[in-house]
Length: 85
Image 1 (cartoon, rainbow, N blue to C red):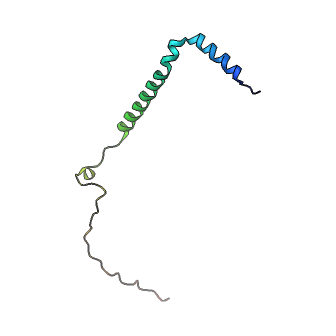
Image 2: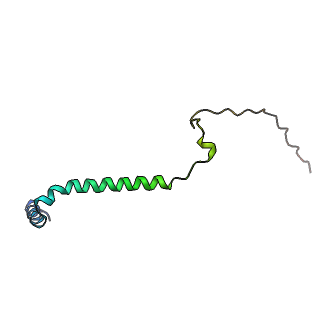
Image 3: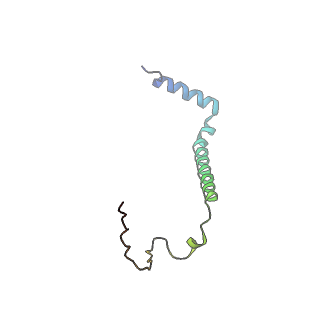
């Protein structure tokens, strides 16, 4: 026998029904669902407002995942001169 036996849960359920009534318990699920949806919406709008604006260079029409070619010419670097002391 644990702290909350099935008999205890039955008594708790009866007390909850007497206190809140059956009409309130029927709407409890939809009320909780609406509250969660509202919370998620508020979090999404907060994150959208906190995003910094992108620099003008990144706002171009080219996608960021496209490869870019950098033109340049390679030059050989001379070996450093070693000093003899």
